[in-house]
Length: 338
Image 1: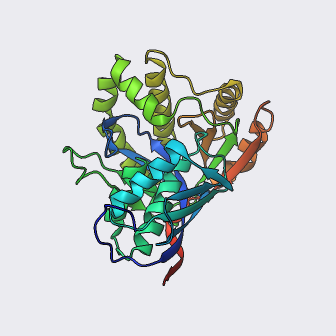
Image 2: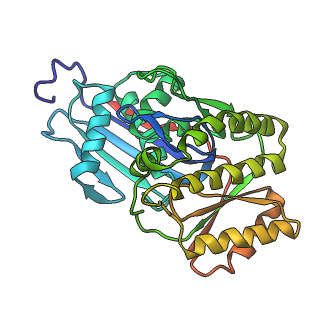
């Protein structure tokens, strides 16, 4: 039991959870309050089946400190403290914990590893502590670890709501359509496996403080969300794709207008954008989106996958291409209590 934390009734507990990364179609960029990860704008995302995090947590009364292992390597310092602080949000009187997490895709490289990671940690830890949280409560909890994690609680398409108070009571994700709703694809062109030099939170804060366009970004988001909801409901692929690409470039244009300018792209990113635009001009419906990193994601329908993949294979610098379908909600894989 953690010292000076009060009396805990929690016994030795163990759980394993799996969550999938999500890619925002209508982008999230900016926080109105950093401590609780309260977003400045709402967002709409697609959870992907091929980007997966599995997290095991063991609350152990014999431990004298929290332990964290990520992708087979022991983690210390600020990343370990971030995990410890998050677990304290769940139960401040908890025993210390051993956390082991594995991603099947590059970490901290613009592929939403923090989203799947904290969604899996929120679910495994709360389940091990027998909290039986609703999905909405789980989404609120995951948000405190990573803003995007609130959406990875759900499968398929989800919307993150932007509230208006400083407590976060109305900041959580809601499901729009599950993973079986629309047979759609997202290809991911991995152009780098390196950790990005500027993290999302740092980038968001710098943008909010220095970009002359930040207020316009916040004010224009509600109309983008409304249009995307309608496009998804109608399964209007061209409209959904156009909005996806528009939101992407609006976000990156905003980041580039910060001081100093924030540019997450590399040469392969730019060339992939050009290739997909050329492909679309020649009749293949495919649309680009890019998060805070150099990886390029392409939204398309199943019939266009081969054409998109062949086009991307001509780009120097693309290391791997993943073909993803809509993925499932976060789920418990194993649960035990001594």
